[in-house]
Image (tube, rainbow, N blue to C red; front, top):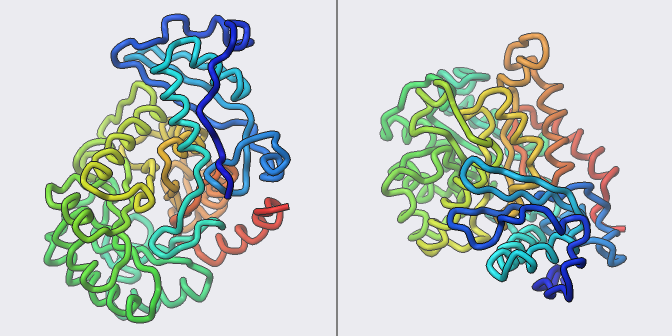
Amino acid sequence: MPPTSKPAAKPASKSAAGSLASFCPWAADEEGMRVYLRPVGLLPIAAWEKGAAVPLAGGRFAFATAELIVRQGARIERAFAPLSEIMAWGWERGRAVAEVLDQRLAALTRARAPFGGLDLGRPAIMGIVNVTPDSFSDGGDFFDAKAAIAHGEALLEEGADLLDIGGESTRPGSAAVPPEEEEARVLPVVRHFAAKGAVVSVDTRHARVMRAALDAGARIINDVAGLRDPGALPLVAEKGAPVVLMHMQGEDPSTMQQNPVYEDAALDVFDWLADRVEACRAAGLPLDAIVVDPGIGFGKTLQHNLDILRYTALYHGLGCPVLIGLSRKGFISKLSRGEAPKDRLGGSLAAGLETLNQGAQILRVHDVAQTAQARAVWEALHPAKS
């Protein structure tokens, strides 16, 4: 694939910034200032092939326009403009701002490599296998290892590209599970599917369980705590294990929903994930081994969840594939008629497809067959190549 972006050329005059000439005159090298790009008005990938746009994360969409966001503390300013004007504006603000914008654009446009053996050229479906007695949606349904294995087999048959096996509920208010108990729940299931050659991720926030699961054949670590267990980051770096970094406000699922507060939910989550990605890279984990998940429902109100989902495309600016896990979550029923978790399929599909329309690469779901059907129709409507 040819280069998708190059450093912006310095404009000859202030008029080069067009409609942005007077935007954020205070933005330069001020301490604590952050600059973001959110792709908007996504186009078919053919627009890139014809030279009219740049590709979004090497996927099915391209873009020529973005929302430029400048933030310093509680002060946030936004503008929509063509990329050419945004990059010219950056040079007018100074070299430091221009270089940040170049980095953001490079991260947005770089093609995503396979992750854990998965080709992300099409959206991947991660099937959920909860080996727990108390998960919010299907707790107890697959607590027995034999039932969990049968369920995972069914999900693979229905079209799951990988299985996410977890032994600790992280629903709001859930109690912690001792690592040895978590291991006893998940390891037989991990071993079974690893022996079959299936792509397996283990859903855990404990370094001890991560190590045991990797030794049992899991390929991916999916951590709702973003590797905050002191032993987790050194472990994944040692093993070179692909990891999903999820945002959760607070340290514990039992308290995460107690009055979550953000200055700007979408940007705060982006900043937190950016710090975790940088920590992983500093520890020696390559960027292609990292996926980010903004953590829908984990320390977020209804409005926070909606704000983040509307800004899904923003998170491509981290340079990593984006995973979205919203299947059957409570915000769906709050927007509808208070349905029980297993009756939230329609909302799960609607929200999931919206994130695919913003380039999300992985959907974590309970209802694999229905999601696979929806994906098939979506793929036909959004072909990867002309």
